Length: 368
Image (cartoon, rainbow, N blue to C red; front, side, top):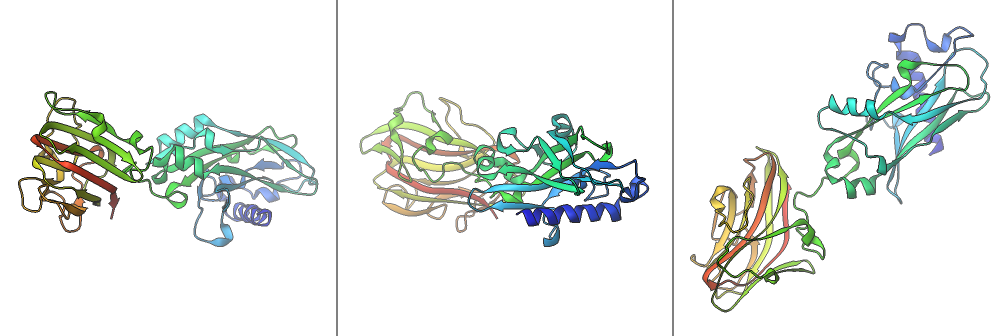
């Protein structure tokens, strides 16, 4: 990594020497007494007009500005300190810091930008350039595993941190190039977040879902729903019961974008006066209130249509459904009529009958 780091610093220095026309006379040719200290990365994109430093910088391997440890999944972003001028090369140090106010300002002026959280990165507090050297590199290290675990939505964002140098022990600081706005492209390093959280119904996935009783005068027993070993089981037994429950979570969709819904489904059959549906709507279910699935897009299977809940069914929704709207029953594809937060609702209801046992697995919504 050290050799790569040296390459990027040298590349940055050359770029600044050749391209920093906005700063007047070439810094490397500055008079003997006017040596300047700066961050080459602050000028590498556009000569210092914005101080922006995208990561990745571009698709040229010669200018790769990061490395990833395949074992720890740590992202190492290459930064550095450079001293211009013809003065004798003597050792000096600078302090390294994060400018939180500048980071906030950069994010506010950027589409889809977020600040890099302080608990997912590390940065040295000082850099020392040795005698007879003009530059030294240091790294901003980002824990990608923790970033993904704690901030999964950042996978689609521009993740920003302004890093600066200050207080050189020798020489003058070039204030215009003393800060670098690091802009990490989230999609380049993080997998796209799952739209449905806990749709694998693994142990503990209950934390992503909310259970509601939608019928105050019916039977409501939380044990009707059991999540275990990759399966969601809904059991209303074999007797005559009345009940209506919703199991739901908020999801994020974008209007006009195509998605695909898929859910493994089976039922024991023998149902009378019952239904199960998956609905996507911008209306959140409310305690004690019947939920009208036609307020959104949905796939439904009920006891009033052939091949419905009256007989054993095994397959995938919406393909084995008896009724759907807005979702293709062959492919599961739908075009979202919503943008932002909407609700994915699983509903099972029966009116003076039963729905037997319904099992679900591998519930997914994927952008296509």
